[in-house]
Image 1 (spheres, rainbow, N blue to C red):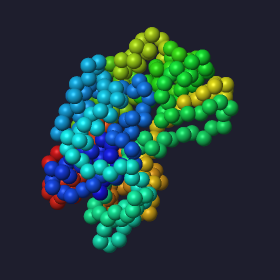
Image 2: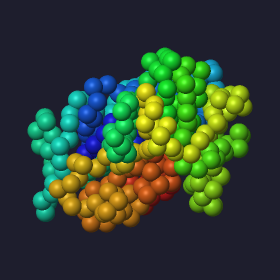
Image 3: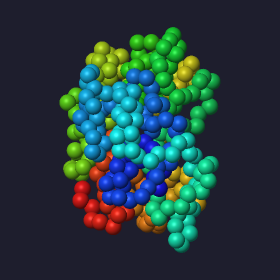
Image 4: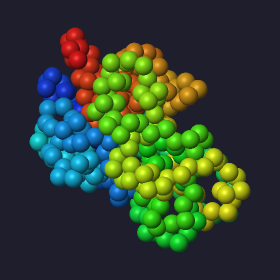
Length: 320
């Protein structure tokens, strides 16, 4: 049983199909694409199409450099059809429990049984929102869509990562923008993109974070070079004066469905060996970030950990 039909779930299904392992994918969304249909309108990948592919089939070229979220959705939709992935929609998984013989997956469409469960629910559905009492409107990255909604308003964007930089660059021509970060923005060298970051993470040479926090995709680079992305320290007074505050403050793993198994630590994570739960070896966690595999929360990075996960399930040695 694979829980989640986004990029990680599809990569797992690809390798399960190749290994001849009977499986189904449960997805809460009404249509393919995982979290990608829910991003802001101008969202771009960090890598060109050929460096943003799932196993087996390269992403089709995108004519204008870094692919849009719409291009990713079209690719994931076609990928699902190409490999005849058995996705059941819209199925909400409430919880996973266990017996000595099997795992039980409780959903709004009944209870399923499985010898193994791959949890691939990602992080988008659990945004981290700071608790702040402010007079203005408060949004998170997940709520932002189009800059024209904020025309003429005082908008504060909080966060020095990629989403903060991209949304600030998107808003700068339309709103009175203040971009707040805890420390001065750290841009990666302009020639660095997602493929290079994946290679660095895979080699485990140094740390990606040592290079910087922000990939300078073209819209960010243009806004930066035009002087529109002058970040300031977080200021409570400016937050209180803003019409809108957009918190680009990250996400947490969406693991609420695993609560009955009592496996999560104080950070909300599950201890893993590779991607396999230490406390429940029939459970595997895929695509949540570095703790479940190098760059595993990316399109290009999830493939190797999906392959290793399925090899372990199938009882064959992982050849990654």
